[in-house]
Image (cartoon, rainbow, N blue to C red; front, side, top):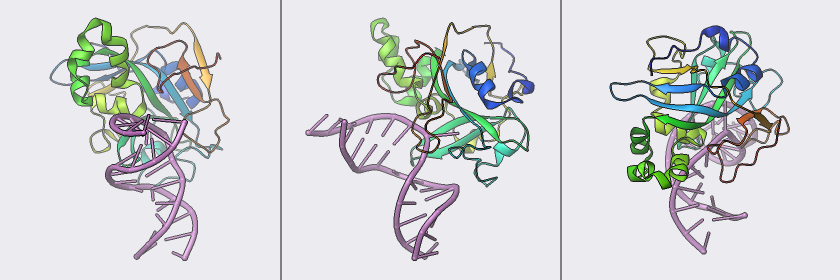
Length: 215
DNA sequence: TTATAGATTGCCT
DNA sequence: GGCAATCTATAAT
């Protein structure tokens, strides 16, 4: 995958617009071996201003300082004592919006993903078992970080738009047919706002039985 | 200084 | 469907 990262200007926009436009893009972990990559099928926007659910809502802290820096950088945080989640910062220093990457459709490096996730590799290579098995790799914000080896110590603050970065988001010209919106998942504050965006009908959304509304 | 809730997941019944 | 795991940021003492 010899794709260029998305430019910084892509992320220097309202998080809702960035979120919608990130659907269909590729999240790529480069390394010495085959790249691990997945197509973004589910995201959530966090607005910071007037968004009590956003980590940036109460201003900058040691944990969220990346959000108050330039756009296009990785904000990785640790949650529930077990999992990392990946966000991309949007807008500049004065507006700390971001987009949470919640699910990918595996595209490349599935063997390495399976290894990283502790899923039997055979399950991901036997054709019949694939759809179900592949869901275990990157369908969920914690899972996709596991699969791509994304951690806070390693990746927080990383510039996702840098050519030399080992973690980038790229456009391979894929365009989603239909996009749906729903309320964000797993939050209680501002739970009514429809800031979750998914590729309608994708088999790789988070959750057990995803049924997004049309939007 | 101590308590609690959290942008989750996987295993249990 | 229910709940434990397991750490940390933030609230409460």
